[in-house]
Amino acid sequence: MTASSTTLTGLARKFVQDQIIDEEIAAKAQTHALENRVSIVTHLVTNGQADAKALAFSAAQEFGMPVLDLSAFSTESLPEKVIEEKLIRKHHTLPLFRRGNRLFIAVSDPTNIQAQDEIKFHTGLSIDAVLVEDDKLSVAIDKYLDSQDTSMGDLDDADLEGIDVDSGDDQEQEVSASDADDAPIVKYVNKMLLDAIKGGASDLHFEPYEKAYRVRYRTDGILHEVSRPSIKLAPKISARLKVMSQLDISERRVPQDGRIKMKLSKTKAIDFRVNTLPTLWGEKIVLRILDPSSAKMGIDALGYEEVQKEMYMEALHQPQGMILVTGPTGSGKTVSLYTGLNILNTPERNISTAEDPVEINLEGINQVNVNNKVGLGFAEALRSFLRQDPDIVMVGEIRDLETASIAIKAAQTGHMVMSTLHTNSAPETLTRMLNMGVPAFNIATSVSLIIAQRLARRLCSSCKEPIDVPKEQLEKMGYTKEQIDSGFTVYQPKGCDKCNNGYKGRLGIYEVVKITPKISQLIMNEASSIEIAAAAAEEGFNDLRKSALLKAMEGVTSLSEVDRVTKD
Image (cartoon, rainbow, N blue to C red; front, side):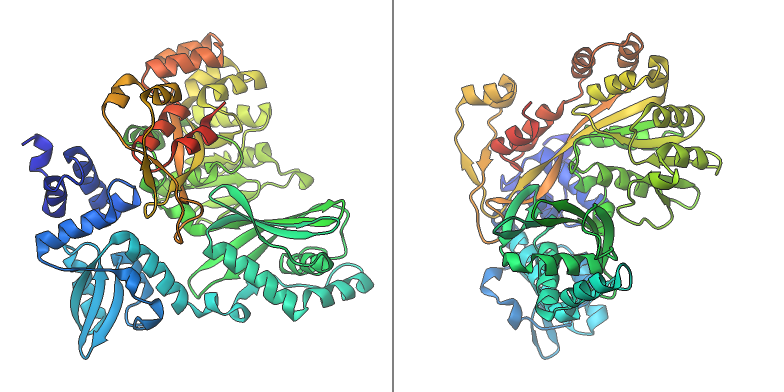
């Protein structure tokens, strides 16, 4: 018995004994599950570290319980409104059926006695737990809660705020307002928005062409077509979206920016950031879905390796310095920054952000929309922040020397500064700042951590399948001989009714580089990004490629996805 195995308790020990997971994974999973107040079963399944079915049968053997196949149950037959949604989400459970004063609930972790006690207290019923597979439970919970939420089910009841048709030229406005209020168009647009939210899309594209009109969703980073309405409906769809976004319906010659707020229920609302663009055959309109819950996922849900997470947390809790997050548009930079801000967001700290635009409202943080038309740019906002007794400052993007200089001065005078740049890797971020004209000494003494990131699609845990990959190919991909000899399993996407072509959701791939004395010296000497990258590798910091390969080793993504997001 090793030291780690003696600390294992309950199901973690049983899973190791049954050789479903090894001791190291079990110890880490047990720690993370306790820290995040989730079941160890849910943690292992969500992170792709174990098979849900194997875990369920192992737990069944330990507790002498049968395993119920949840896919045989129809959500329509489940009892309605017996347990509040927040309890279902909190305890990862589901009401199955009721017999008199007894309520049978589905659980994937039979050790969670607190869940049964709390549900018993709230419902006043006796509780019987039924063991099910965790992945099937997650799917059933989502379906069940979707069917209970009338605001999601009935398109007519969706509360879409921001409808105003009283601006612009009267004659033009009258025609457009009539188009916008056409009942079938209202229903169609509402359905597109609701379907996008249910399908986990990040963006919606409404695109007019000469002889066709199409609607596409970006799901898990990939665009796919979902609808082809008649081209004759293009002006009406455009008018409806512009009315909802409080945009000028009569103006079709210049781009416009707006926002839609959709209330899904009394407690949940989702914002859409809207942009219109005049094209050859009409206005293309793109909506970005801004889900406030994405900013509160917690750092463990982002996909950092343990060492990378520790470096980020250490940098966040420094009294001063600069953290830079870099990557292309749509790589999750904003979520990384917001997650850090949420960790720091306490009553003792004054936090201000300058963003273009503010994507998600964060309670307790002073957020400013930059507006270059009136002379409020990043630099001007940053100057003002420094006169308002700040502790932490977040600048949406460092675009020029002026903003960079003020941000660095703030980082050197007792403030924590967080910002983003558009570069491909952490070392390139340093050389980019040098090229902007920032003195090397200032960069070396103010920047404390750089995070480069990408988003890769996560393999569906229900249908992913193992494949044999020749050792030569693995070596060519970038794996070391030690890693290849360790005998890990490579998985590929298959596709099922629970996912999109074998993938479901996304995970972060990170290159986290701490500015060590050695790297500082290279910055002072104005070294190239190649030299800085070599030094970072010597210091033990994984680049994006190595981090992505580790995710494939863990079985959470595929080698083809590794190539897609990290190939130069």
